[in-house]
Every structure is written in structure tokens, then in C-alpha cells.
Image (cartoon, rainbow, N blue to C red; front, side, top):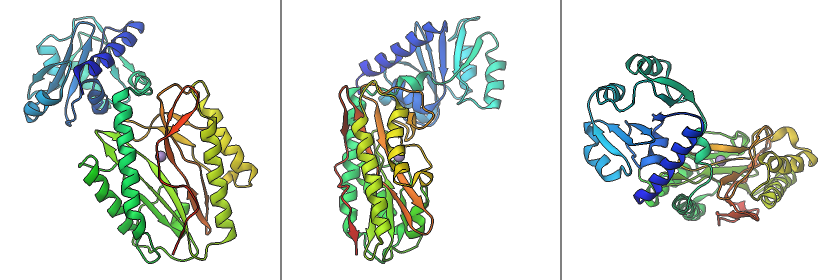
Length: 362
Ligand SMILES: [Mn+2]
């Protein structure tokens, strides 16, 4: 990605800091550092002020930072990054500097306060989180690719989803394909494959339980591409399923389609959550849908805003959201259906191509 993208993001952050009467920021969250200058390694601090952006890392990352870091002056040092800031006088004495209170530990804060005692430090949270909500064209491109890879892997794995196959086998195969086609370091998150009673646990960890007749099956997984996440869930019934299991599937699918239909820029996240929630409530399953309708995703798998009962956010163009209603009934099983969508000015663009038709596994 070209330097201009990172410069644009850094400039927006500078603008937001100056609106808050702050002279700069110590960025310590590695995902935020990646967003602001492109570095993907595991140790760095970014120091942003109106005048300059300094990137500090250690000797393990000499080559990598030269290749990746854009729009920042690179400093390689083997001592604490806060000592570097002090020794090289990167921040003027008395200046008001923000740090991410959510990301700095208690000990980290003590260290900053001691070493950088010449600064006025102020904890802020949510500033960069707010910035990343609306995705730029490069980010949308990466998310589209992550979703394409997810669809492709799903299509390849579907033929092996049969009665008698273990949850773990399906999860491992998906993970293998995501790493083959997408980022090689990991999938977007550990795949959830829940059969029968396990399908009623929204965050089930795959086991050696085998897909059996007359039950529901939930598969929730996603690829990662260039650091950007995809997240898709599909549910199935197996041969011998009950009327109620089929009916639960239909209710969840209708709730999902209806809530996506309501999405467009300017609409509140809470009202979208409410579309799915009311639909499920009216069908008599309200108490079996006990999580939010969806979340934003990007360089993190779960970002703000959320589709939830308590959200105060309003959708804007180029927000990327998941829409994932579910119903989970003990002993009957669970259904969740999830797509990733891009918010547009007049609607939502659904990225996933994998079918949502009711399918029976035999
Ligand atoms: Mn999700």
C-alpha cells in the first residue's frame, strides 16, 4: 500500500488530536500501528505529533520495518521505547500527549509516567477505533478478498461435510485452506464447528464428536487477507431433522434477510438489531437469541460499532458489518446465519456468495 494511505490516516489522527487540544500521541496498540504505518511485527511504538511521526522498534525488525513502514521515521533501539523517546527528545517538555489507556497495562503506565515525567500524559480511548470504522478502498479490497477466500474454502469443504465426520476434521480443513489461500499466519479466528447439542453453543470449540442424523450443524469461520478479516456462518440440518429444527432455520434466515434489508447509511445500529430481534421474538424464540446481531470487522475480527440493543452508533458509508442472528435451544440445537456486508448510501452490499438455502446433509 502506498505511503499516501498511511499519511492520510496519520493526518486524520493529528486533526482529531488537535481538536482535543492534544499535542501528540503514543500509539502502542500493534493493530493501530499497522493501520497508521503498515508495520506487522510484534514490538513497536509510534510517536505522532503535528510535526513528525517516529516509529520505534528493535533490531529484530531492521529489514522488516524498512520494507513495511511508510510515512514515519524509523528508529531501531534495543532499549525501552519510552527511554528512546526521552533520550532522543522526541516529545517537547510540557506537551500534552495522549496514550491508549485501554492498551497500556498498569505497569506500562507506571513506566511511562516515570520515564516521560516531563510530559502531560492523557489517557484516551476510542479515537483510533472511531477512525477505523469507515473503510477506505484498499481496506474494502482486502476484506472482499478475505470473503472470497472464505467462500472458496467453504465450497471446497462442503463435499466432506457428511454424517460420520468429526467436527475437528472440518474445522482443521477450513483452517488449512484459509492459510493456503489467505494470510499464512492464521485464519480470521479459530473455526467453530458445532454438531447436534454443540450447535446450541454459539462459541463452541470443535471436538471429535461426529455429525449424526436428525440434528443441526453450525459452521462459523473466516479467512484473513492482508490482515483483514472475514467472518461467515452457515447452518445445516442432517437427514431425519425435525419440523422444529427446519422452522428455526427459516426464522433465523428471515430475520437475517430482513435486517440486511434495513441497512443503509444514516440508520442506527440499534434499529437494525431490533429488526432481527423482533422477528425472532414474534416467532416465539426471543429468549434463545442472546447475543448482538453483528459487529464491524477489519484489522480486528470484532470492531465497533456493534449491532446490539445498547448501541448508540449510526451507520455510515463504507462501514463493514456482520449480520448474524441465531437461535440456540438446548437439546434441539442451534442455527446461526452470518454474512459480511458493506454499508452504502442506499443499502447494503452482501459480500458472501455461499448459499443460505436450507440444505440437508446425509
Ligand atoms: Mn461474527
